[in-house]
Image (cartoon, rainbow over all chains, first blue to last red; front, side, top):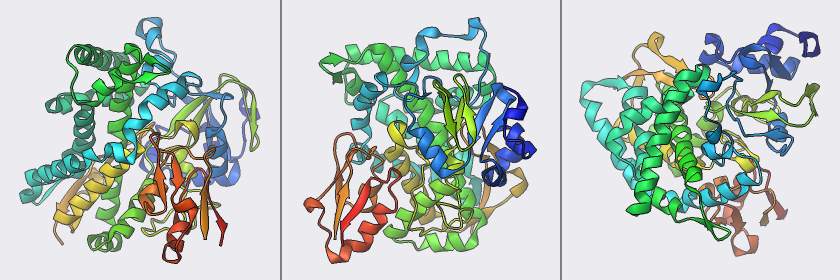
Length: 408
Length: 65
């Protein structure tokens, strides 16, 4: 495919770069420009990909099964040398159901979802609340903290470790592993494989242990889960655990961090939440998820697709730009403004269709509890060093350094 | 007013349940179903409109009212 076949309107439409510092810092202007001119951009960078920006297009693409495959849901195409590949962990054994297509996606999802309904995650609520208070106890007397490193980043790994039933004292390692796969490893096959192997070996041992010593935790539950009369195979369970660690940590901490970044810099919104009732918290959490959606997934084209002027060909990569879709003015009034009590909000921060985020209820609860507890203890806070705020982007966008000062 | 949840469209986001547990419940997969045959009392009509307008799958509709 040549560049002339792409939408030749402007550079951003034919040469976007999801790792460009400006895009990582604030992708909203780029989406707006592409949406108005293209509206599906293409780039040859990072192995090539398409970037839809309209809500309706992203919704339609999310429903295209089997035309689009999820077997390799990473956002870039890296030609991975043979020595850095693990074919036995590619596709649905890697991280089902996120890395699977039907029919494997269907039964692996059916096995996993009952553990993540609002009722199933309710026992994590008290744990999360206590954890948030303990974290705040650790820094509140300092007059400030790094809200990303000291708070947001600390919550999801401990909650998922608690739910899985793995050693919560190893969260610093989990964080390193997940960043090794999702951030540092995204463009570096050797790094990615190193951390992917570490996670795989860790959970393989955990699953073996649960087979011999069952207990009251999710890994044991998965070991006992039957689909159509058959126990889940161990490699599938290891992949599911991998998914929960990798997908459940970077993402949720990004959402919590983005929300705190927003409130630190928006005095009116912050003061409003300091006295918020349950109704306002309910809409505010969804609005923050919409405005600062962290996750961009990807699909691989299996059959030719014509959509909004773009001709997607087999083998092409399509970025599932859920964050951009959530800023479409056709669907969201005043989309680039955070409206805490927004009533019409069909955001797709957790995706749409059969690959809707399996952990969405857990993530929503963590975000709600993390923010409410923070506001209960620290109603007034501001950015102490705006120039030092650093964002990560690519597949998951959120603040990684976020220094704040407490008090008016 | 009555609401109806499409079982075909629902993907189990559970946003309706988190916003209006008086109007809908969710099954073991997180898929929503309406309570009281979808009947919405007058004081919950705003809430019903809210869950219609917040469903990412366009799965909830007001069928009477």
